Amino acid sequence: MRDNFSALAELGAAVYGVSGDYVYSHHEWAKALGLPFVLLSDHDHRVAAAYDSYDAARGMNRRTIYLVDTSGSVAYVDPAYKVNDPAAFERLRSAVAAAR
Image 1 (cartoon, rainbow, N blue to C red):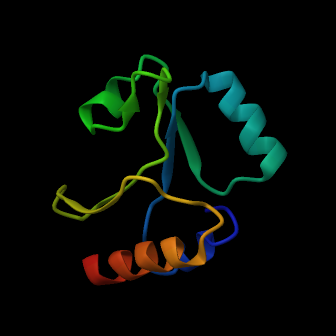
Image 2: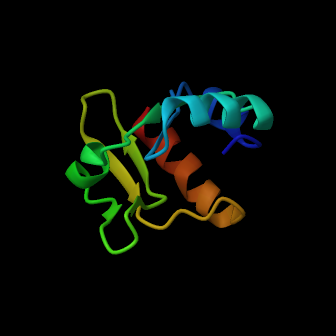
């Protein structure tokens, strides 16, 4: 996401990462990796559970992409986003462009 961030930003997308880690670890991770987007903490996994993206067996949030359009509706979901898969990113980029 970091390496392709500009392609989404050019389309007017606001990108947020949500993770079950603590705020402090997010700060350090974002700084170390130079992340150009905000990381939000979901340490109690309530957000992930509400979006059916919590893996109770592993005790962690799944890597899921949600595109929320300007009306607040979920316009696209990738329940198993692969960060190193160009096709996964292209599907997301196309969905963002279509939601404009």
